[in-house]
Image 1 (cartoon, rainbow, N blue to C red):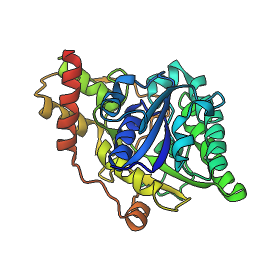
Image 2: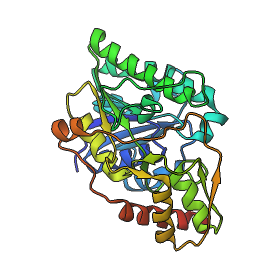
Image 3: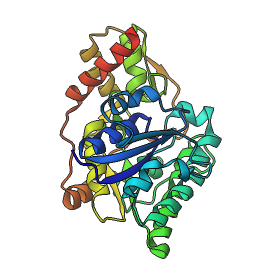
Length: 325
C-alpha cells in the first residue's frame, strides 16, 4: 500500500484517538499520533506500531498545551500535512474533578496551537467537540442549531465551556483566516480501550458487573443517554474530515435509553446478579441526551449501524480480558 498523505492526530493514544489512527492507516494515510499520556495509554497504539514502520506511523509524547515540536514531526517533511485532528482532551467526570486545569489548557491553548499548524500547512482541521456543549439541554433531540444550557460555574464547566471556546476558535479562524475547519460534536461513545477507571457509565457499570459489585446509578436512573459504538463514530469522523463542511455535525446514536435500561442490558450480557445501588445525582448531569443526526445523514450519508447488544458484547469482552490481566 502506497502512503502518499499524512495526518496528525492529537490524543492519538486515547480511546477514540487510537481507533482513529488505525482507521487512517488502514486507508493508506500515514499518521503522527501526539499524546502526553495523562489519560491515553501507549498500549492503545501497540497494533499500529506493530503493523506499520516509522515511514507510516510515528508516536510523539508531548503536551499540546505547549508549543508543538514541529522539528520532531518527521512525516511532515516527507509527506506534508493533509490534516490535523485535535482529539486530545480528558473527557470523564473523574477527570473534571482531578485535572480541570489540564482540560482547560488542552482545548484552549492546544486548539490554538493545532489550528496554527493547520493554517501553516493549509491542512484540513477537525475539532473533537462534544454533546456537553449543550449542557443540561432544554431541547430534545439536540440539533446543531441549539445553543445549549450550560452552567459556567459548575464542576463540569472546565470541560463544557472550554469545548465551546474551542468551537469559537475554529469557527472564527475559518471565517477570518481561511481555516478549512470542521467540528464533530461527539455523543456518548463506548467500545474497547476505554479506561476502566474513568467514571463514565459504560466502563463503570461494566467493571462493577464483571467484579460482582453493586451497579451504582447516580440519581433516579431515568436520565437518558444515546450510546454509539466506537467504529460507527470513527466512520462518521472520517466522513466529516473528508468533506468540506465547516459547520458542527452531531455524531451519536439517536436511540435514547434510560440509565436503568442500560444497566439492565449490561446485566444480561455479563450474566451479573449484582443489585443496582442508587447514589446522589451528579451536579449538572444532563437529564436527557439524544442527538438529532439529520445533518450527518443528509450531508455525510452517515448513521450508526452497531446495535447496543452487539457493541456491548464486544466491549465487555475487552474489559473482561483487561481485568483478568
